[in-house]
Image (tube, rainbow, N blue to C red):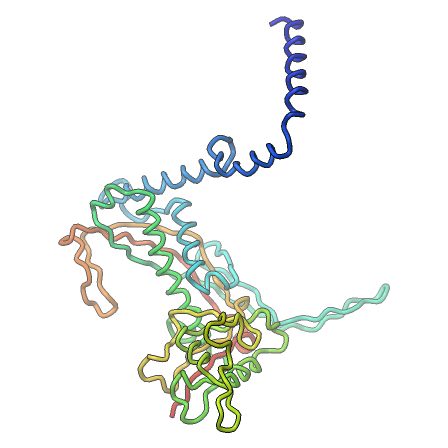
Length: 369
């Protein structure tokens, strides 16, 4: 094409543009804008295709997890699988959703801590004063957590995105439950709000040996145990639905007359807070139907910003068709070889530590007798 022809072509393009652009009304622009979510695959650089590629890679990975196959042994899971497991865990658990996230570079991480400091107004040329904070260190030490997901060999051979998402869902829910038990109940001595020896609490009055005996005044006593420097907007209650319902059954009593429920009555929305503090209902918390409730901790008041959640963000998968799946007592639940199944083991590395135990958390327990 000659220079003259190029010039003519450019003039034609310019003329077409000048004729077309004014005809595109604001209504047309809004219509195109509203349809953008439906046009994702038409535009380069959009995340839709990238997401599909990640899902396809995850399906291929799971299909390759055949015992003795190319992916035998522990393999780092694809990004899609790891992110979905974390997403599901955050949706279902409190510790991972509300705790202070701390990425662990390797298996060990020392986190500096300090109590509150003070701010001062400074005169021109004067020095800045400060209170002396009590400093310390919390050591995050990665501990292995894992979950077994049994799958039939036939399903694995014909793996789809739906199967991958099911594995992610089951693994994420199981990890969320374990993490909440760790952060609140404690899995061993010294762990969690209930077993950290620096956390103090409220014991119900003599004779109140069941969880349902809790009164709103007991919760006020729990609030009083929290350091005044911890803002109430950082605090959240943690309790079971059954204990929450026990509180909802409480009535205001004047003399010998019941004056109605303390909470909003039947047919109204449940309150969003208790004593102006939000609450979370968790299935891992003790319930009013539990046996031997005397002297047991059953409710917590937590500043989740003082719960450190360390995560290496490295998840692996491996598979076996030769083992058996047993419960905590050693009873066989599934014999994989006999039942033409495999077990996919998802393993990660996390740690959960309580910070400022004496200042930022409290528990409530029933009377021993």
